[in-house]
Length: 451
Image (tube, rainbow, N blue to C red):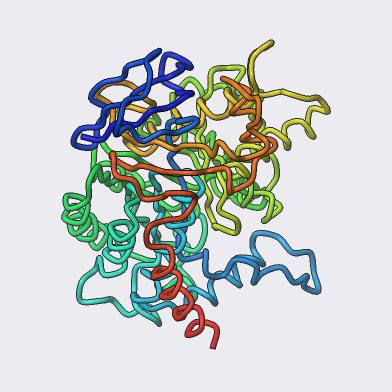
């Protein structure tokens, strides 16, 4: 048993002071509050529930910063995608594992405890199938095991280049499966997940442009009770193409033709109208927002205030991993809404902390989207925890919700002290236990990829 002592503790029922958390077999067995520390307790200034990162493409961490040169025409998502395709075309299984491990170390150091890996780099260089259809997915699972991050593995079904079942192009050859092949991939991934503590397996039809309606229906039924994640309405061009194909906008088509419910996570959903906002909220689907990537790609701004006003639920992800920062994702989400509404403190309730509203909503939404039944600090819950450094200047004289406000709007990465996943500490004094060896492997992989 491990006992953590927190001067400030954010539990599911609110802030507590002077608390002892008893961790047994990866769970919180008991919480005592308003008590003094005892000999042998591990002392911390503030402990919060750790966050789930609901959307990641780990391999893209290796190309961060390589698509920032302006072309002869207007750069957008589609020009960025060409760069991504060229980078993905060269990656070997060993390199994928090294890059994913580096990304997961950085996620843990940022305060994330779990990652939803939207994994679509399936085949060998040139698109040739591996003898094991889950060779690359296995490397993702190995990276999670190496670093200790909890994994919600979301193997992607990707079959077409655009709406209407258009044949995939050469650059997409490493991503594509037919439905039967994808079913075999899912079967293999079940073994990986069974070997990981608190692992979750879901399905991920890539987007409406990459699957036909018939394929979508079959993919969703493969794991009837598991998470379903899909990219949708990320770019205006995608919306126009969907209307040309179906007569409907992407989110409207999805809602009208599928039983969208709390299993679903609609990733981005940037370009939605008033009716779509209302009906997504009613469906109880989670919207997966990735503000740093969406800003980097110039996608647009999701109408978060309007969505939350009708009871919508969201979580946050790092997507392209251009910058892995929980603080960055949540603060940018609020700031883009401020710019849109020309007002301050727009996400949250009147008289309440904006930081706490952002953090707790993202905590609940991210956990549900990744198939985690319980989120937050309570007796019986999995011990996924993050502690904040008492020495950080921005936390001086801060209590309760002011701690989260200062964390999100004034904090830096160094503010995270320790991170526990399932009761095991993987980050201490801001450093992951395997940071140096993971970085060495990552550096070697990048030298090979960029040679």
